[in-house]
Image (cartoon, rainbow, N blue to C red; front, top):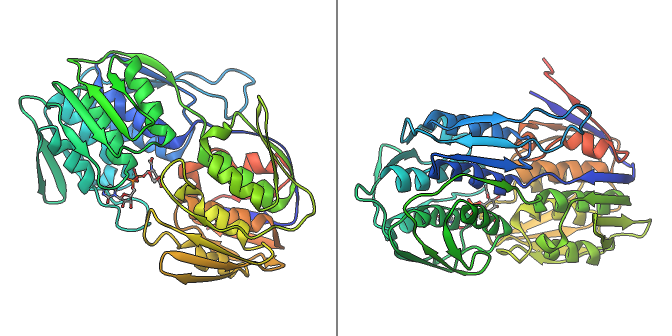
Length: 431
Ligand code: UD1
């Protein structure tokens, strides 16, 4: 199993190209199931989760091809992926595949909408709380599906097709909104989604579905209206930049100090996080090229944050921001409101010398003058990268074990950080 070794204490200086958003690419790839024609996606990041989803889609009958990398192109240059679900050969997504990646459960919606039936294993996935799917199933039921749970599988049927309906989410759910959008696009009649998630990835999916012939109004707002159509067609779509990756490297630059240009990042997608990073003492500048983050010498200030649905502070940056706060001059209060049990990074940060006390959904972080390198263990995707951030500013060497979590969501992490002067190295297959 790979490990990453980091020797802390180097400032970061240089340019980091921001990749396409994993959390947009996954639902967009799943949307290819909605049409027999080819969906071409540009700017899909090269990640373990993307490869896993290609396997799952392949199992269902989706053919894919990836354009060759241009000679001399940067390793993270965009390679369009063509996805064609000409014939869906199976309406069942098995446990062995779905359990490896939670978002793959979302295939239930297009399978049901196009085939009238889907059998999808209940997901496993990231260890960040229970993460139920009740609201996704509620949305499908509102569109006329019969849903039964049979031996760990969700069996959803709508033999006469889905019909439009009113879906009111009692809680903002990204996956629920993706599911409702995909299913309603091919349902008969009009659908209203209330309290929809407003995350940029929802708007990106809706844009793509619109290019495929769907009729959607209001994506990006909490009230979305969809007029179902009989069929969808092929399209070409570019995945939006990854706001979580951009926020992660912005925090890394604030932590290590230096001057980093996040090329291709869009500030509007992560304003709440940029505000917090600025309050912590970094300079954040927005240019046509991207976002520039600088910090020279001055100490970090404590900042209180609470995670919230978009446009609030993203839960997917909570662990990284906590890492930053471990070196602030004073106490900060970090509240996690989206997921219970999303504090597994606390114990590992403590191994690096951080002072953090947990009280329910609040973490109280008392900044320390110095972190010390140590062996640590990655637990989930965002938690792992928070350890990398802490390690960049820790004295001595940190070994991050179990980095397959990082590979799920961060493209060329060590190349991107190493290119800015970090001393970071991947060690493969250590016995
Ligand atoms: C997506 C993101 C994830 C991010 C999260 C919140 C992807 C692939 N993943 O996950 O990175 O952290 O949004 O921004 O895009 N809930 C229910 N019942 C349901 C569904 C959700 O109670 O049926 C709850 C969850 O437990 C959680 C909250 O709703 O407390 C939000 O979850 P949701 O927005 O659905 O997260 P995901 O779509 O799984």
